[in-house]
Image (cartoon, rainbow, N blue to C red; front, side, top):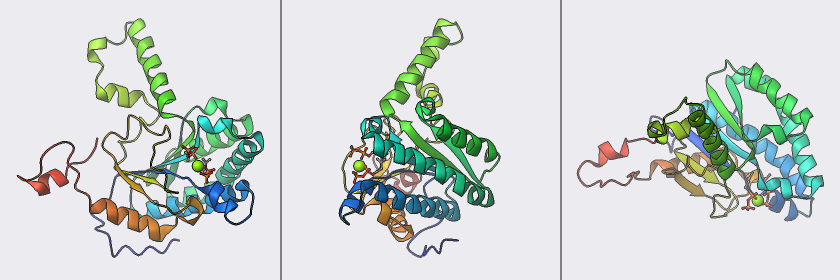
Length: 257
Ligand code: IPE
Ligand code: IPE
Ligand code: MG
């Protein structure tokens, strides 16, 4: 059980979907003279903390960018270690996920994962499918551009098969064809380790997401800073391209899709 100090938050105005680029594990380890892999191991504890905090806050959707399509180009030793950690994470966390009503979904090209990891992932997806307190989208072997390519291919096939009229393709059709179809667009994106970039994460989905970047490295990102990020989100004025001087309260209440 996570002890969350929510006194800085208006719990009636929390985001519906938080997405996280969990970055900085390698630097965390290097600063301590350890191997990068030790940083990934420590990062796992932050994953548990953030999943459980999200659940406790009652936020229904969380996306975790765990491994990108570009991360396959890292040294094989690191890739193998990350795959092993993912497999062990799924195996050890399943009990807590079941107890906490957490549903796991995979977003990305899971076919590319080693079969032992895929099996563990499919097992977690299957076992948690009826949980509905929090949906955690694990973005593994995920690339925003690849996601869009797959969506376009699918729509193209539907058009070719005569099942879809090109005139009927709208933003909702595209959103529904992406890996994140089961979730609304993120309201808040958190990136740790100070990098001011998206790194090919949710390209379509982040159109109007509020972005919070912290210098904290992922293994050090825990519940207190999560609350800080959420409080910062609540201080933002989301305009969605409109003007606010007329009815600011009303505009502020507007949410992403
Ligand atoms: C994030 O930490 C984890 C993955 C991308 C898999 P990094 O491994 O990118 O750590 P830094 O950015 O090199 O410190
Ligand atoms: C983004 O981090 C991907 C994940 C956190 C999974 P990277 O460390 O791969 O991104 P860059 O290389 O800094 O852009
Ligand atoms: Mg990085």
